[in-house]
Length: 174
Image 1 (tube, rainbow, N blue to C red):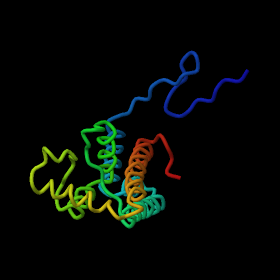
Image 2 (image 1 turned 180 degrees about the vertical axis):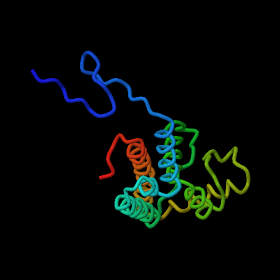
Image 3 (image 1 turned 120 degrees about the vertical axis):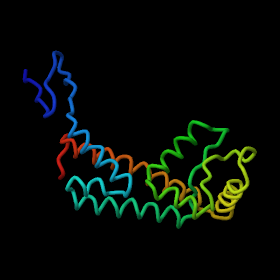
């Protein structure tokens, strides 16, 4: 019977489980810096940790996904009181696109409307929700566009986690 190989970062405990990895302050700082950079601009986290080729590819993929979503008439999500959990997750996914998300929301709807309950929304945000609804009407591929926008946010979350792993040394840059 062979002994399981030890992965870098942790010793094997009895029973074959891996001991928790302790990160020092510099590793945490590098990981947070890479994740923050990746949130500011998709792919920038990989650029910061030295994975420049990956950074350019990831930037191109996320940007193309966002562009396709808008070309198909996609909408950014708002919190809907009828489905509060899933709609909040969708808004969080949109926010994973970084600081460009509020800018896109303001350009598309004229306001930073994050709530979909029109009875509680004041004037400019109510108008923004009307514009959002009008964007979806008459556009046969609007749901596909919205899916592309959500996919771009989810992809960026995965890229943030990947940049974190590279920055703390858990994963190689290759």
